[in-house]
Length: 64
Image 1 (cartoon, rainbow, N blue to C red):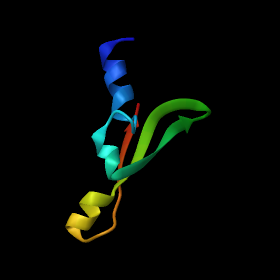
Image 2 (cartoon, rainbow, N blue to C red):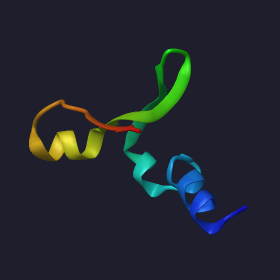
Image 3 (cartoon, rainbow, N blue to C red):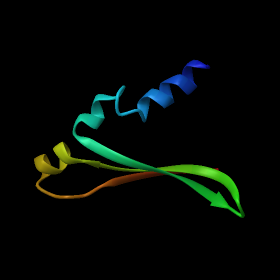
Image 4 (cartoon, rainbow, N blue to C red):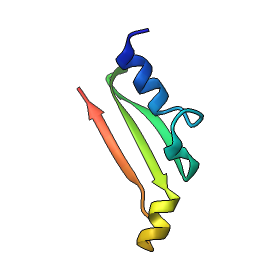
């Protein structure tokens, strides 16, 4: 496996990334006319929300 691919795989793996000790995420594929055109991750970081005294999430769309 190419290093960048392995790094991205570990980035979204809750067992490999300490971020997920206080956060959760859902992953989606963006499709256009049945073809995958991007990935979307929706994350909620409970530790950050407690620190900021608010309940928000973050989303990072990546479309081609």
